[in-house]
Image (cartoon, rainbow, N blue to C red):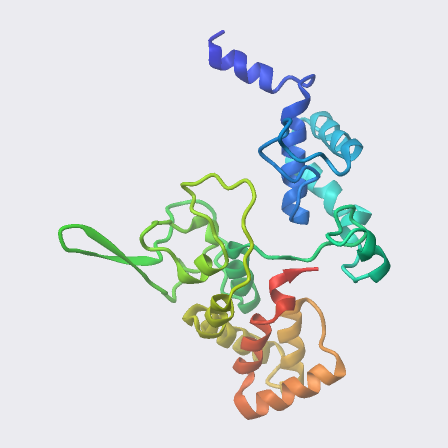
Length: 279
């Protein structure tokens, strides 16, 4: 066996505890925003200590027992009581554990930049589910002794594919993704930064892609509500927030839709914290 084969055999040996623990921790981090070990790329002496070491060992063992299949581990985590609990604030618990490190509630977390874009497309009904193939290019180029890349917002099915199929160019980044901390694929990012800046609110308000998806969500909701405005408001809430509006929300939304148009209401829904955060 060559050295690379020996390394692969050593790394995937069921008796080797580290790879399974690292993978399980990364999956936990994906769902909770923070891993059981808060330093996903450092399980050594300088890394953070696990908050629930026995749980991490159990998840790693389940991953190995399941033939290293990730889907089963995802399912176990999202069906757990820890994942399904509310994010309701408890002052007494917060006094002891302000960061909810020990998971006395589900820690609210913002969607990743790519998921924000994809969720808007899904809500509006514009998401193109095509799999595979070449990346879409959200930019145009010009040449003057060198090639320059300019962000481009196109309204066609190819552009409406999931963001994972976006071609990334460092000098021509997509503004909406950029303000929501989308990292460069050229840089290893085991744990994404999460900032809160005025640019995010301004981008959600003014970005042409967001405004277009709001209009498409409005048109979709009106069609599903057979032109009835209160029914269309209900459909818009269901598509954007996965819940019906309260009586007061419905009354305010219908009044706003009659005055400004349903697109304005849908635009407000796509700008809301409830749309942007997993709770």
